[in-house]
Length: 99
Image 1 (tube, rainbow, N blue to C red):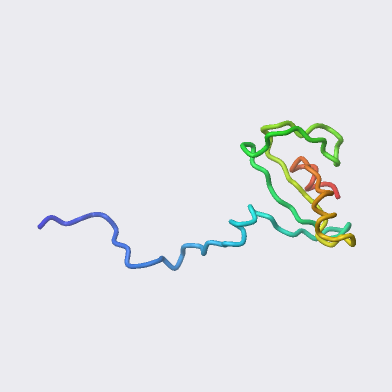
Image 2: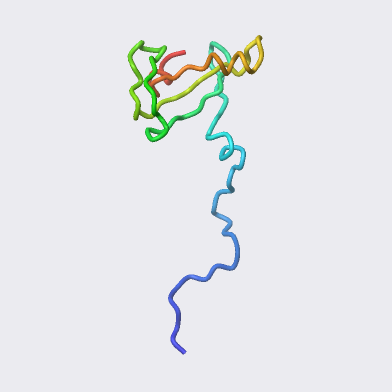
């Protein structure tokens, strides 16, 4: 019988990272802590960016089709709905250097 050169799998490999179900369900949302407080931050891919926005960091447009960051307060006093309504679209670079 000829020998098969395909690798055999006997179960999940120990070196494979575990899937983070929370990250998958929230679209990569994370909380970042900065001088101005805690912020929910979510990346938007170029394919998901379908509208134009104005970046609060540089006041220039975030053009549709450009990957960017959406950020909103994670520690606001008026509640989660108010914080979510106050979310802003930032250029990735502006978010890194600003706020």
